[in-house]
Length: 189
Image (tube, rainbow, N blue to C red; front, side, top):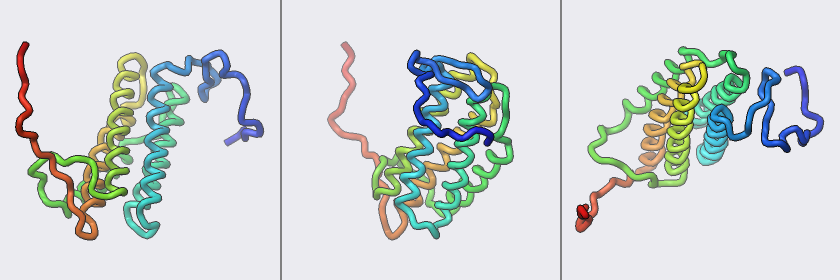
């Protein structure tokens, strides 16, 4: 990292633009920035989740690696044409996902976010990850980007789902099952 920030505010964004890593400037509400912002938000949520589990927990190490991957993905998106994330990281997520899912009972109902704080944080991170993925798809429709990033977000949301299930079930906790409400009807007008 060549330059260090000695001053946090630069005033260069006062006109509604922001600088990319290649030196170009784009609107702060450009689709590329929307994706970068969603990935940043997801990374923040994973940091909160890590505060809810012990440092010795294997999930903490996995989540730490994921946070670094997400930072790489954000960096990649801030330098158009640059690639940092590889298919090997997607495969690693799949291995983590398979290992966690192997210890869970088959899912027979939809589940609601809840059960305990760590599980709920994980479900929130999953929902934000899905939004980041949707934002990435929109960016892919207008710009060329590394497709590994989209695959990574897709697998990560699945991993966060099974991780949430595991976190809720620990220590005898129970998943909150969705029950279709009786009395709800759909009326046609």
